[in-house]
Length: 561
Picture 1 (spheres, rainbow, N blue to C red):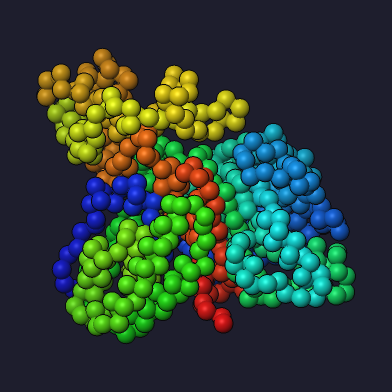
Picture 2 (tube, one colour):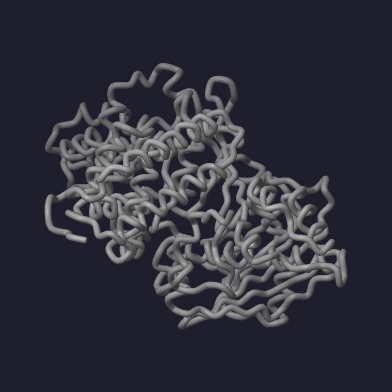
């Protein structure tokens, strides 16, 4: 590898931050699940199961402890005998097949007793600052029954059926950061293992996957007795944890502009860094070629019935065929191979294919890009302070720079403001409604930055250019949030979605996909334009298998035929 050569800058926000591209992003080396498994392996974390008290009906509790260099974390799991008619992935559900809390340390019997009275209730219960997250999960009923029946009869489950679903349980929420009495983010923010975002939540899901495997094997023994066999390790690894994610996640990336900027900027910096490489070694090109082949297998196993995703998958399959044919030449032996590849992809592939290439070129260069994961949290509280001395002209320039595309839209036209975000009274969860068909406008949440920026821009035109923005805000406090966001963009160029979040054609699943790709999710399966199912940790080694050799590339399936 030779680094000298041309300087490649990050891709422009106007290109990266369009919803269609955000909705085409894939996991990469900086995704939070992979950051966690790499850390646990490199630091030699130890895992134990001090408690597994589950009866033959599948009811009981278990504790899984992960011991790092400085402290321990424990998943406290509760298994329930849930009637089929009560099983629902909707946020309004009141019962689940399993519920969980991630405990800060190792829980005592008294802690487990306390949690047993609250964790199964989820929102209706209360936890304490000793708990770092709260979650719940439901079975994939048909696959669960198939796996239990197979193991109980002394057989392994059908791998094709495993791959069709991908998980035995799916979470419907993983709550952290102070919800329901759990510890605030500040409690863990300075810990080394929490420097990258969402590491606590990712650890909770990783341990949940182990509990699910152990529970299904326990149920097989309860049904089959001595005939029962455990899951073969290679089949067990194919199973991840599913997740059903709805509109509750979409406003997150609007409401956390600095944090989301840091995620995108880190990825774009990594891509730009690799594009600067003048020449690639044989090992680096071999790694890339291997992972392209494994990506072909992953996409072939990616199933969806949603027409939008079906179309995108068709394009992605063709993209990979085109990529494989292109790589058959000597492009990777030429000068600046990765820059050539990315530039070629921009005209030869769909956005899905382009973003997959952007992720894949990072894989041979962990030593260059992995450290960027420590830059992805948001610790810049000063960014939220409005600079009242900034001249009106400077604020107008910032709005124009970030929302030039929006200034040309007719915001009185129904198609550009067809929808409104609001919060449901029953569950205090975000919802998206039809502005002209439902009585929701008076409850609208400020989740339309583009529309609000245009309104602020128009109001600013009536003020002298050299006036301080503080004077404007004294007369127009309704524009404070827009001015704050405009000033943030000086430090955070990727802070704004450069698309309409309330238009008639807006697809909220694009926002969900963007966030979930940074988690490390794969096989996105939209069930409508407002919620999506994904799989997490499919292919990952279980705690007893985790080593530095298998801690990272597990996300790319290998052909075991």
